[in-house]
Image (cartoon, rainbow, N blue to C red; front, side, top):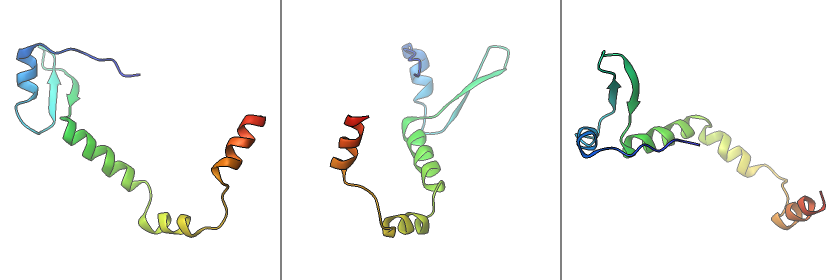
Length: 80
């Protein structure tokens, strides 16, 4: 589970200064984390997911015979 942090108006304004990733630093200059705007985060996740499997592999799996009907799966889960 992800922890939710409520930002004050000043920090919120700094984070909304653009649509670029930001490096978050302590007063000492030490990096404590990174902030990705929602659009950048969603694109990163989408690109990562797409990189996990090729279009050819997806097509191969679609064409592969077999599988079970959802009703059959539910029936088996209920009897377990």
